[in-house]
Image (cartoon, rainbow, N blue to C red):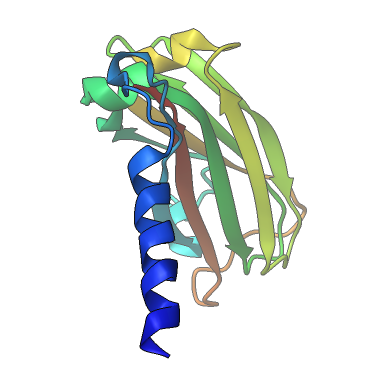
Length: 181
């Protein structure tokens, strides 16, 4: 039995020693990495009291500007291909809302405006995804702030601050990057 294995071992060794080899050239390697990561963007909760002034008169527009510094990172900024923004909204109000989500530069000029979306009264499970493709919207890369406007639809009934109604807004961004090495 041992005699039969020795020729087999010799054949395997000779095969490895005379096999074809070529010099490797690491200068011509083209490596493409496409990582992605998700990060929260803007989230808040509003109740009926937030839409009433001190005289219990309705405020029809709630607006807030949030700092958006993620693009301060030059590696991310230089390699960003697309941003997909996921919105999740719970509207516990008996009224509809219109939401405007706008990216602004340092001087509050609009760099990208996501189409308004309407949230129906009582919709507790609204979700939507909007994408920004950098190739078609390069001015987005100058964004440093996000403005969210929540517009209360008109109604014949006034809001009652004694009845608790909540409007929850959550957004997150999935950043798609591309590195060529």
